[in-house]
Amino acid sequence: MSGTSWYAVLQYAGGGFAGWQRQPRERTVQAEVEAVLERLDAAPVTTHAAGRTDTGVHALGQVISFRLTRSWTPANLTRALNALLPADVWVPRTGRAPDGFHARKHARARCYRYVVGCDAASASPFRRPYEWALGRPLDAVLLARAAAAFAGEHDFRAFSAVGQVKPHYRCDVTHIRWRPRDEGTGYILDIESDRFLHRMVRFLVGASVDVALGRRPADDIPRLLAGTDNQEASPPAPPHGLYLVTARYDTLQPEGEGHPCSSSSTPRT
Image (cartoon, rainbow, N blue to C red):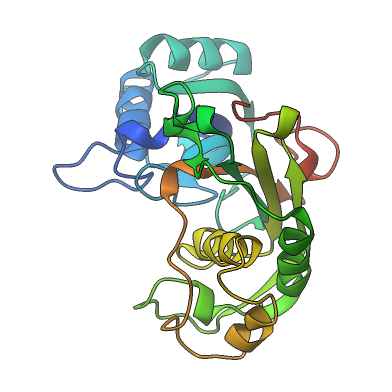
């Protein structure tokens, strides 16, 4: 295939999109980005993303791959993209990638973040679109117990959307931690895994919050992990509290050095 392989890191506010993946008659991030790349390359451009975020889900470091036939420098390509993309999408950087690089297939792991607001001010219009405005205190000890139960390799069918046909449903959660936000405003979950099932993080958060509110015992989580469906799972947390932080690769590190879940990019607090 002619051209040069590229990657780009995207940030976007998900509230105005029906997710990443192109859909007929719906506004998607992929369609917006590909339309701009087509203008810049004077030819159709296909992009591949590290994670296919759902409707309303945000991104702090979505990694995409694509090929361009025209000659660009990373600095000029970044400036051109940001000049043409809509205001709810921003590209902090681009770079040349190894030939054949594929943002989804070559990702070793992905990191997500979920933000919960526990104070009354979480209902503010400046916060509500970017977090779960729970407005109630959570038990930090119980949140930590829930996180510990999810760590490691498990079959996560009980914590994912129905209808997925996969060779297997096992995911290896290598990092998971709830941390308090500033001045008691809530909590942030950081989670990294080799793969994620559809809506998996939102189901994990929904169950963790139910445990931290005393709605179900922490011992429920190992029992649910042993199940084969989500019939007894807590409802998934709303999408607008979820952020794709970054992806980890062997061939490049688009977010710089360090553990992806310790990225300096942070949502609103």
